[in-house]
Length: 320
Ligand code: AVJ
Image 1 (cartoon, helix red, strand yellow):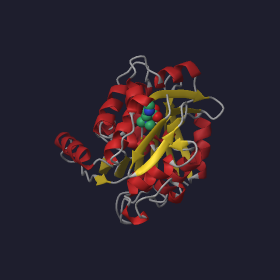
Image 2: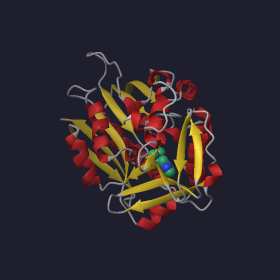
Image 3: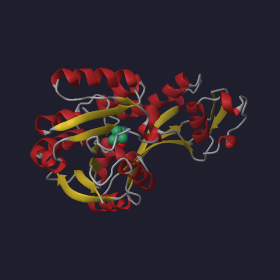
Image 4: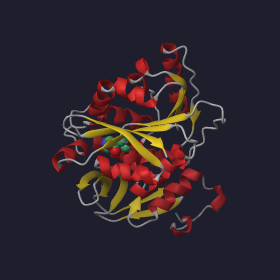
């Protein structure tokens, strides 16, 4: 990303925060783009929680059923005495579906939102007093360092929810390499992957009839406004999500409905009528496709669990 493609840089480079630099760089590209991590301010996180309650958004429901129905087998594959590391753990809710049968040395939930993470970890600790929980506040998309000593219990990464779909395939491989690099020859990766399926089902999942996903998408602009003292008029944008079958991904955009000029972090941005701002990819993989990506990151498949409709896959990998 090149900051110097930004229009009218009024502040010197070192006075712009990292967030401002990243957002400005994305909005200076053509097409414009903003990282999906900016969805998740307090309101955005609440809106995402509301998405997970929607009938049309099948992902959490199907993944939970796979984890719960196959808990014994999944926990046997992981084995006992490991350190479970969960990037983007949020409410630490999903680990609870495994804990009744999972014998861990430690649990390291990671999240960018420190306060929420701390509260979630405390509440988990209330229910599992004997579990060693060491939350780590970090942005895992920037890199992973769990500081394990050689004689610590080996790490098993838990990355559920199809979060890996937010990365482009090459970036997903990079991210898995970063997890692989935290392991010696023992460890693992338990990952939830959304699969390719009928375009109508995917379309409905990202264009729900109650419009919650639309609100979630638009809220990203509110978040940018408050983070970067912006004046983007959110009424000038509409939600636009489609399934690109050729690339195997949902593409979310904000479409500008009329010419608009706005300030953000002291810089001026022009939006043309009909212009799209890309906010998110959500890649869908056939299990075999995903196994190939994991292989190129240094992992070998141990087992794949799916629902009867094969709408989702939970996969366990070990380092090679
Ligand atoms: C949290 C990234 C898995 O891609 O399905 C849901 C986010 N975006 N509806 C996804 C999301 C729109 C979600 N992930």
